[in-house]
Length: 364
Image 1 (cartoon, rainbow, N blue to C red):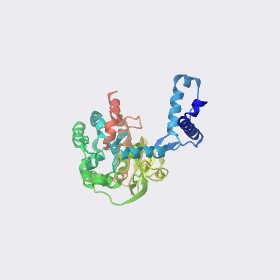
Image 2: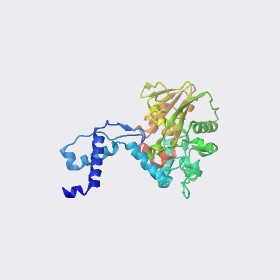
Image 3: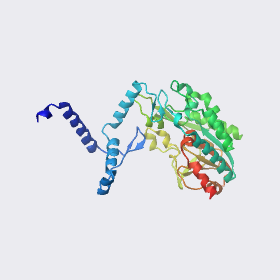
Image 4: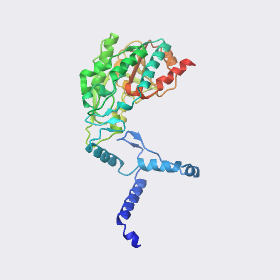
């Protein structure tokens, strides 16, 4: 008893930890973290097999970590201390007045393989093909990079990719550079409505068609994007999410006509870009007032661009290789399209192998 009295700090610390644990267990469970834009760990069953294998210990740690009382405030406090210590990178995100992806650890060989895969898939589909690749924002706003940081030479990489693909290749970097910081959001990797408009006009010029101007620009405040979710910071200013919505475009997903081009439920969250075209279903279709069919192979970068393109076609078939196992050449042939368009972010092509895996269908 005498030795315990000599350890008041230890007793206080243990009391605080036990109290926090009880509050965590007894507080209402959250299904997702809006700040981190992810689903949190779910409750789990405790079984003898799980105890013996160690799964229960791991699941308990994951659950308590995700549902720790005051977790969001703790993360903001920790990141605020990082900012005070002039830390320039966290979770692969470069910190500053604009958040940008750290390119030093990205796999350029994967991007080159993806470019080659695009060429192979276009040849297999016997399609007139164009590629639109979105560079990372660091290529457009290099002055915002930390001092002494050596970014990936995106211009050279994109040129190498163009050569490997053998496709008609839109110079997106030249289209975006005049916009500077207005081309991308501060907290996200996607284009703003101004960035999308610049790429749309450049693509229309490349195809020899006249851009449509009958669009309504929608604005939603309080947007914190994917970069912020990886490195949330206190007092970081929210973006205004912008979206150009043309008239007369309808969206169909899995045979169901959607009530609009934006998922109203997701506009209430921080990551509002996820609302565009209802996220990233493997297959979807846009119907417009034009003629012919366009087949688009894409990632999320295309979502805000596709409604503008749909104004020029009767139908736009949308194919996201990350979320469908359907062979791309077969899907293209069944669509009745005569034009194939790749719209992908360089981020995806540096990290994802879905297009590369699609070439396996042709080999069988």
